[in-house]
Amino acid sequence: MWWHNWRYLPHMKDEALSPMGRLMESLPIAEPTPAIREAAETAVRRLIEITASRQETHRVLHDWLRVEFAIEKPSNKLHNLTALDSDAFIAEVKHLRGRKLPLTVAGLQALRQEHTTTIEPARHRAAEALALEQQINHLVNHAYALTPAETALLWSTAPPRMPIPPDERMVSGK
Image (cartoon, rainbow, N blue to C red; front, side):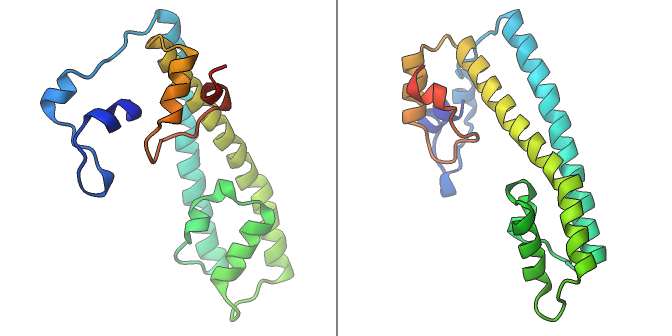
């Protein structure tokens, strides 16, 4: 839909799209087979669980950093916890604390432990979410009966800010 809407809906300021009523009425919606619907519903339910878990992890971890490490406002890097390995996580906490509040050995150990127990599992869930999003994308393409060549064309002409990165199998048309 992102690809379709990018081409057919009017563009507004800052690349926003205007969902004009008459254009939305003619939006092509494929009717999935029962198997596609069931697979998509299962994947979406799991994505909802992962999203809820991600939000809770961020809330709890940011609260812990505020209380234990005096980080009142998390940086953009800390908002994207799953992109940080242990060293990057510690470096960002150290950076936000500044020179006036150096990390102690106990603080360093606590951050490494928290990364292992909280962020690492979140990283695995983020990878699972990406795989599920790509699975749903594949199911939707299948519901629309897109050929591998059409799918490759879709990805090669993808608009900016596609919600998910392409699956290499889809880009190559295999």
